Image 1 (tube, rainbow, N blue to C red):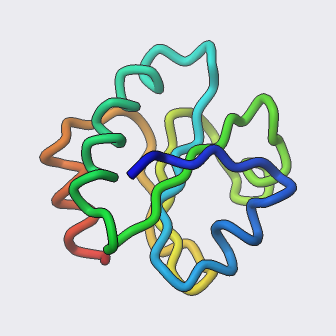
Image 2 (cartoon, rainbow, N blue to C red):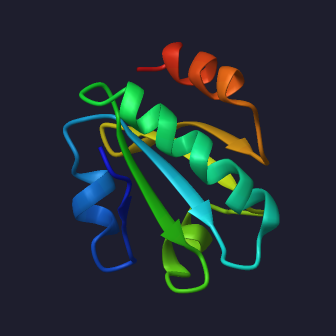
Length: 106
């Protein structure tokens, strides 16, 4: 499963209106920790296919969603269920921490 890039234009359709839980990876091109976290998120997306949808949003190209949800830094991971934020994690993390965090919520 590939991680879909979303923008402000399709954020509502892909995240808010999704029938599946959605993990949103807010990132920026200049962010070193974002680049380090991406392969981990990709692995988890593949392993949890069918349980959680994974999308990424570049905060530089799509500023509305990060502003709406009060982002203070990147990388930020937000888990949405039924159109609402269930939980948020800011900063990098090892794969085991990400999978444990998601396992409790999806």
